[in-house]
Image (cartoon, rainbow, N blue to C red; front, side, top):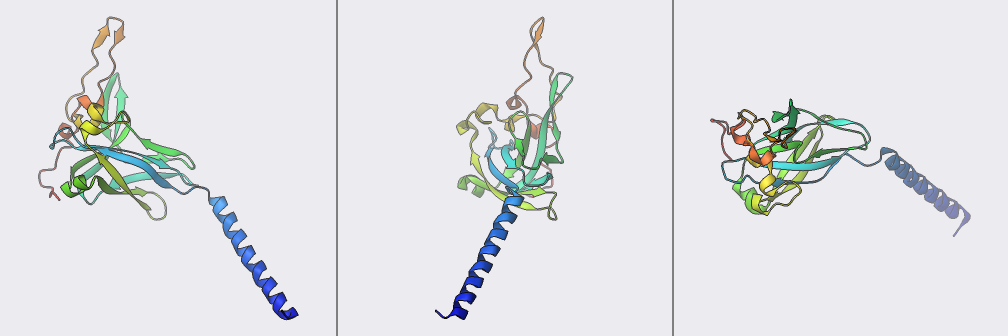
Length: 210
């Protein structure tokens, strides 16, 4: 190889190495990206009851908020939260949920959760519901995630079976926990003892079913 050609080859190799190093440093500086890493849906115990959704989000390099979760193959999706007030557990709509930088946001049984009305039968047969998670970054970034669907009778202890909140009553007046003994109150009713569909969040009368 001639001296000029060798010099050109060396310069090209150095330039390529510099670009690669720069890209690596940039990626290291950003850290892990914002992402939905896991989740599942538990169907209601009966067809007239809404399904419930749980999931986990890993935060990216900056704090953001989850402002909506949508699904084209469901009539309606809402974020809810179980709240204890004066010894009574109630369900309230949730409009925003913080995702800390490099932290996590968890929707789980007994806390934040999704209520999902009238999932398209085709999605139920397929065993998954494509969902879009909308965040307050990059012009409301949307992250797509296929949520596996479990039947209530087949779900596990991670937020399913008879304890799934799909049977929760959001509309009924919350019941105060009965006293187990004169000095000790009974535990708050499990989410499965309430009916989300009857809590004023039932099926809208004029909403079109998909």
